[in-house]
Length: 319
Image 1: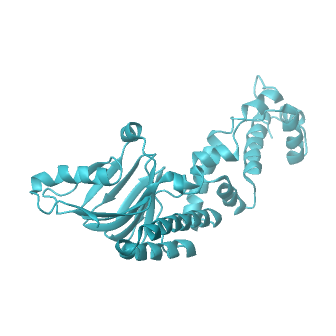
Image 2: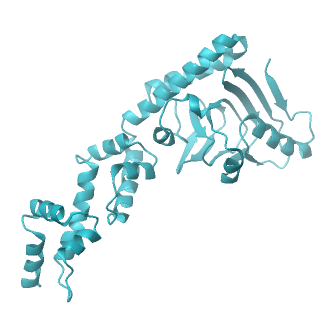
């Protein structure tokens, strides 16, 4: 039998407190802000399939927020996969904002702050389970939170259909069937995450992300430890996906970083100043750890050594 929590028998003045407690007990501790002066009646109907809790929620406009203080206090490590039936959800997590439409699903991770705003009456079904049962890396998981799924890939479309069927069948399943289907659901979700990482992003989103990454690199060129792993982690994508973004421009990540550093060094060496810096100082300033390596790649790129470039600039200050 499902567990049903409802505010329908409560007065408007009592609904907000009850609903806040119901939402936090069903999922993880959350702040709930209702956007109606007189809150509408709301319900949560929950049942279990092994380690997975399935909850169907129907309520009025509201925002739920998972804040750092809650994470520090409870330390719960759960994922919530939410299939939206009615309304529009605005989701934010891991530096990403997305809008989820009916028929689409999205994922949130209780270990990091997130928020979800629904500005009209809504209904959805959530599949809530421990993070430990999903066999994907944390980097891959961070790359897909607050992302709308369901219409943009074979795996996500299949999973959306599976979630709808599972919701309808949940009450008729035996415990053994429930446990097995819960695991299958997590396996399908892992396939969706892997599919998302393997294919190029939508052109506009991909270009915007690449622009942000390039801007990040420009600001950190002086760091000799700047590398693909650190760049990917800073933007919550996998290293593999980072390489795919640069492949679309016909260049590798490391080669692009090297080009940017060389351009900065060339510009500085070709500039005539009263106190010209040494070649090694310029190389170090722009992230080259080895002066000899810098001189070698500089000559391969510009056909002259750094010292010759500097000397030429002094002889021809007006050019």
